[in-house]
Image (cartoon, rainbow, N blue to C red; front, side, top):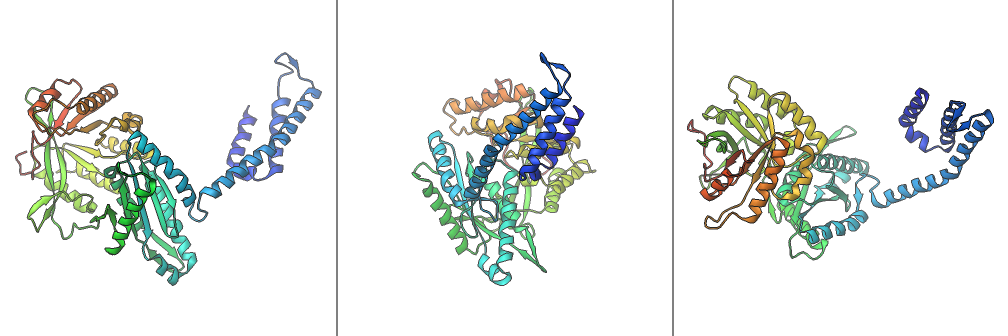
Length: 482
C-alpha cells in the first residue's frame, strides 16, 4: 500500500511531464500493474494467484493501456484544439470567438430570468505609441501583463466574471447576474490595478493606463450587441475626455485621489437595538462624505480614492468626536483584501484612542478563499465582518457558503410610501434573510427605516436585531452628541 501511495505521489508531481510522453505512460502503467498483482495474497477473491495468473493480469493491464491510450490522446488533442479555438495564445484570455458564442447565452439567461447583466469594454491607452517606442515585444509583454492583472482582480470577486480579448489592445469584461452598482466596484478596481502595474522591459519600467466604458442591460435591449454598442459609446466618450478613466453610460467618473485638495469627513448614522425596550443606539455607521465647494454642501463622493493614511485620520476624528464607540466601516473588496489597510485598522482599533468595537461592512462578497483568509485575520484581532446590500433573494447563492465566516447580514429595504401597507417584497426579503441569519446564529440588521409603521412591524419580527434609517437618525457630523 505504501508503495502505491508513493507511486501516485510521484505521478502527481510529474503528471504534466508524463502525460506528454507515451513511453513513460506505459512504464507507469506496468509498474502499477506489477505492484498490484504481485502483492495480492495467494488466495484472493475466490482466486488462487499463481505466478502465471499474475503475469497474465499484468499483460492484460498493459494491453488495456495500449488500447485506451489512443482514445486518451484523441481526447487530449480535442481539448487542446478547443482551447486554441477559444483562447488568445498571447494573453490566455478568452478570444472574440468565445465572446460571440458565450454572450448570447449570458444575454438569453438574463432576459428570460430577468436578471442583470453588465458589459464593460476597455482599451490600453496610447498602445500604438508604446509599440512604436519600445517595439512589439514590449507591446506583447504589456498585453500579457494587463490581462493577468485583470484576471487576478476579477477572481477576487467571482469566478463567473469573464475576460475576453476582443481586439488588438481591446478587452471586454462580462458580469452575469450583477447590477451596475455591484459591478462598478469591480470595474474601478480593475482600472486601479492596471494603473499600479509597471511592466519592466529592458531598462525601462513602462507605466500603463486603461480607459473603460460600461453599461447594464435594459429591458429595451433585443440583442447582445445593443448592450455592447452602449459600452462602446461610453468608451468613445472616455477617450474624448482624455482617457485613463471609467465611463458609465456616458458619465465619466472621478476616481483619482482627491484627498490632498478636497475636504473629506466621516459622517455618522445611528444603528439601534430593536430587542430592548428603550431602543438604545448600539453603534454608529460611518459614511464618507466630501465637501462640495460650489454648492457648499456635503455630498457622497462615490468611489473616490482616499489614501489609507487619510482614511485612518478621518476615522480617528470621527471616533474622538462621538459618544458611541461602536463603529461600522464600509470597505470595498479591494480595501478588505488589502493587508496593509487591515493592519492599519487593527492598529487603530487596539490603539489608545481606538473605538470599543469595529465592524467591517462589505457591500459585495469576495471569492470564498480570499474572504475566509481575511475574515479569519480580522476575527483573530477582535474585528467583526458583516455583509450588506444583499438585496434580492437571488443573492443567497453568493452568501450561503460564507455564512459561517461572517458575523452578520445587513438588508437595505425600500419603503417610501407611509400610507401603504408593508410592501410584499419587503416582507418577503425581511422574513427570508431573517430566517437565514436565525438559523446561522448571526446578527441581522435592517436599514432603510423611513416611518413608524415599518419600525412597528419590524419590532414584531423576532429575528431582527438592529435597525437604522432616516426615520431613526439623519446622517450627521459627529459632534459628541451621538
